[in-house]
Length: 214
Image (tube, rainbow, N blue to C red; front, side, top):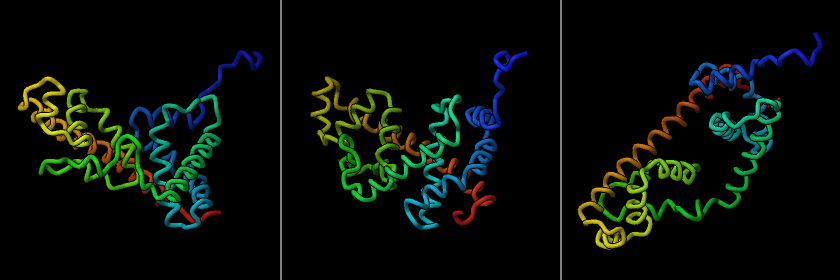
């Protein structure tokens, strides 16, 4: 039988990725353990600090976890991993250099504080992934709730103005805004819990295989 007739067999990393995408936390921790040092060394070259490199490495693995489904299995995983790591480190460097005074052109965190006395669900988003997390949370809202929240908390329209714009009773507008804020807070917490779960896996794996850069 010639080599052309032999079906390619899945590699260990292919199996781990499949298990990880199926929700296997142990598989994810194994991926982190196997590749932590390589990603850490990339991060260390950019920041020059062991502590900062550890933090950046955890952030990189979080984003890699969220991108696993897009990885082309025909490509080399380590090559892809290093490429993603470098790109994210470059983004981090640029964001620090510019001090991120304007977090997002379309959705600014300060503008999204509710005009009413209700506490803003966005107060929990005090981290450098604010804009991305916020967009994800907003997109998870039903369109009717998202529109109401943005008109009130971003454009700072009054309830009456929103009611007139949407052609709805003022009471319905207030109800949608309250429900929208509640749902937005729930979505934000869901994203934060997911991020913390991934970071915890990275920390546990790093604790078993971390060290100074080589």
